[in-house]
Length: 85
Image (cartoon, rainbow, N blue to C red; front, side):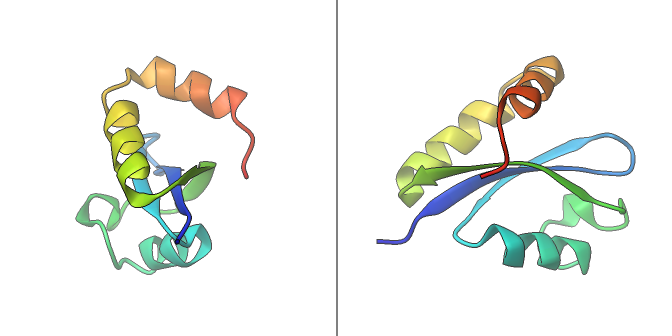
């Protein structure tokens, strides 16, 4: 079974992007190359600020939805509390 991770990326404007993947390094590289989410295109340099191993895809999707609903201040607190895994 594949292990899924949740990640947060900070854009040059300070905006935070939340996503899930099975390979954070590969996905972050895709975002940096302008591939993947349209939200991040042209908003570099990008900074990977948080990663967390979640488990299966279903749990990762649920966690992604929960994080996307958080206020910016709550996301910043999550980044401060959470170590990159």
